[in-house]
Image 1: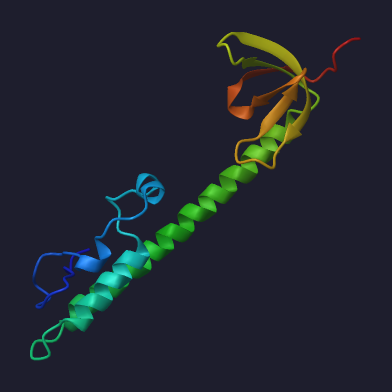
Image 2 (image 1 turned 60 degrees about the horizontal axis):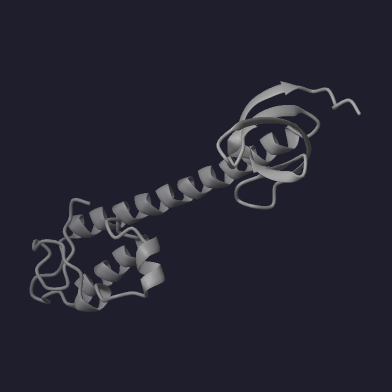
Length: 154
């Protein structure tokens, strides 16, 4: 963002948030939110505050306003792209888990040892797909090798 935002005029002062936007949040939200990133909602709050508190005798520079609007548009486009990539990754993981059903795989067990087993089912409704191997559920990320497609012999 090349144009600074401020709660006080003029538009050439360094970027600062108005007191109401920098207040404390709940503990769970504070630990889950990256404080180094400016969300699109926070960006809009700063822009509105800047417009609200600007000096009427020195209105915001049109070029600076257009710059800030373009930056907001770019942030929104990047957020949409990130969400699309996240959704695509989840679909790819689900597809991978379903293709392993009926195969024998080696995987890292909970105790850290390498185990081998036949994949009888896949659960893809969770964020991290799991495979049913023997009597236990194993995360897809634990699979190290696909050995063959033959069913186990009784």
